[in-house]
Amino acid sequence: MINKDVEKLLLKVQKPGRYVGGELNSVVKNKDEIDVRFAFCFPDTYEIGMSHLGMKILYSLFNERDYIWCERVFAPWLDMEELMVKNDIPLFGLESGDAITDFDFIGFTLQYELSYSNVLNMLKLANIPIKSKDRKNLSQIVVAGGPCSCNPEPLADFVDIFFIGEGEEVDLEVIDLYRECKKENKSKDEFLKLASQIKGVYVPSLYEVKYNDDNTIKSFMPKDNAPAVVEKRLMMNMDESYYPENFVVPNIEIVHDRAVSEIFRGCIRGCRFCQAGFIYRPVREKSIDTIDRQCHTLCNNTGYDEVSLSSLSSSDYTDIIGLLDRLNKWSNDEKVSISLPSLRVDGFTDDILNKIKTVRKSGLTFAPEAGTQRLRDVINKNVLEDELINTCYTAFNGGWTKVKLYFMIGLPTETYEDVEGIAKLAQNVVDTYYRCENKPKGKSVTVTISTSSFVPKPFTPFQWFGQNSREILMDKQKHLKDTIKTKKINYNYHDADTSYLEAVFARGDRRLGKVLEVACEKGFHFDGWSDCFSLKNWLEIFEECGIDPDYYAVRQREFDEILPWDFLDYGVDKEYLIKECKKAYEDTTTPHCRLKCNNCGAAKYRGGVCFEKCKNMV
Image (cartoon, rainbow, N blue to C red; front, top):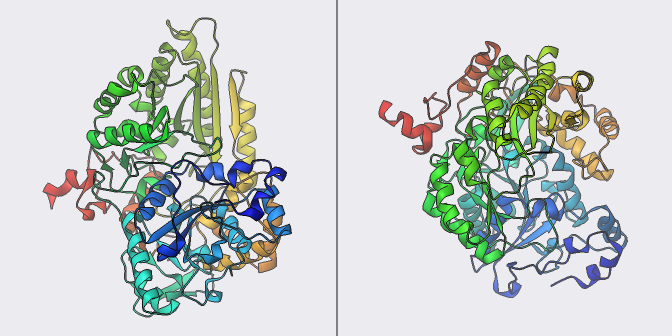
C-alpha cells in the first residue's frame, strides 16, 4: 500500500524499488484489528537491510502474532531524503505507507557503529524527538538490539530499551508487557520499570553514571530496582528456535540476494579480536534434518536458486560433509547451488570442494588475518601458513583461479615485519598456483588482499588495547602497498578514518550522546558510506563538545578500570578475557572449544559445545 505522496516522487529517485513495498511474502494487516504496531528500522539502505538475516527472522516472528503488525523501514538514500524533506513527507513503513509516528515501537538493529548517525537521522525524518526523555507518552517506544548493543552507552540518551543478546524471546516478552500496560493505561515510566525486570532488557534511564577526575567511570548504579547486572538472552535449542518459512523477496537486487539458512550460532575458535566469537557463546548447532527442511522450504517459497549456509565459521559445523550430502540429494536435481561463506583455511578439504562444485567459481575467500605466524598466535587465529598454502593448492587444482585474503592492519604488538608478511604470504599463494599440475589451462591467477584496520571491541581480550593512530595505520597501508611486487596481487584497504570513528563509538560511554546529538542537528548520516563521511566534520563536533576522541579510540586501558559495558553479562568472564589478553602478549595460543574447555564462563548456560566438554568436570 504505497503512500500516494511517496508515489509522486518515485520517478525522481535513482532506485524507486526501495520505497514501494508490495513484495512477495510481505505482510499486510488491518491496522484496526491489531494491538501493537512495530516499525522494524534498519539504519541503512534497502539493499543492505533486506540482506540482514535478523530482520528476516524477527519480521516473520512478530507477524505470526495476530495482534502485532511489524513493518519494515529503511533509511532513504540521499535523493529520496531530500525530496521527503522538501515535500514534508515523514519516514514511513513499507507495508502500510503510514508515518512511523503512528507506531507503538520504533525498533533499530545495531550492526555497525557508524550507523548511529542514521538511527538519529531516521527519528528526525519521522518527526520523532530523538532523546528518550522528550518522548513522554506510552507510544513511539524506541528499542534497539544487535551486536552493537553490547556497548549501548553512546546511544543511552536516545534509546528507551536495549535488548541484550538474542531477540526471539525477549522481544516478544516486552511487546506483550507493553500490550498489557497499554490496556491498563500505565505511563511510559511504569512500563519501562516493569520491562527492566525482564531478563535481557536494559533501560538506560534507570542507571546513573559518575566519573572520576581523569574521566574514567567511578560508578554505574541502578535506580528503581533495576538489576545491577543485565544478562544476555539466547536460544539454547536451535532446532526449536523460530525460523521463517518465507522471506520477503525484494523488488530490486540486494547485497545478498539468496536464501539463507542459519546452521549454528557462536564460534568455537576464540580469535581474540573477534567480538562475535565471544558474545554469541556457546556454540549451538541445528540438526541436519532441521537445516535440510528449512533450506528446501525457503527455496520452494521464494524461488531462490542459491542457499547460503550462514554461521561464523561454516566448516566448523560438526558434520559438514553429512550436511552437504543431505542437501545435495535435492539441490542438484533442482539446480540449487549451496554456498559456504565463512570457510576457515584449515576447514577447506577435497570433500568440501567436491560438494560445492555447483557454486560459481567466482573466487574463494579466506581470512588469515595476519601475515606472520607470530602475529597469528597473538590473535589466536590458530592457522598455519602451510595450511593456507595447501588449501589454495586444493582450490587451484579444483578449478579456482581467484582467491581473496582478508587481513587486519594495526593488530596489538604488530610490527612492520608483520605487515611485510602479508605481501609475502600473498606471493606464496601466487607461486602455489603455478606449481599446480591441474590448474585451469590458459588462465592466470589473481590474489586480492584486503586489509581493514583493527578496532578494539567490547567483550574481547583486546578491549583494553588502544588503536593505532590514523597516521600509523596509513603508513602501514602504504608500506604494504610498496612491498607488493607483482600485478597478480591486488591490494584493497579500508579507510583508516572510518575505523578511527568506529573505535571511538565501540568503546565510548554515554557522554558521546552529546556528540551524536550535534551531529544529528547538522544533518550527519550514512557515515559508513564514503559519499557522506567526513572525519574532519566529526572532529569539529568533538572539539565543539569538548570531547577528545583519542580518549576512546587510542587510549590503552588498565585491567582494573570500570568499562562502560561492565554491567552487561554476555556469558564470558572478565577474568577470562584478561587471561587471554596476557597470553596474547606472550604469543601463546588457546585451543578451541572442541579440543578443550578453557573455562570462559559460557558453560553456565548448560548447553552447547563448551558444556558438552566440561559438564563431567562439575
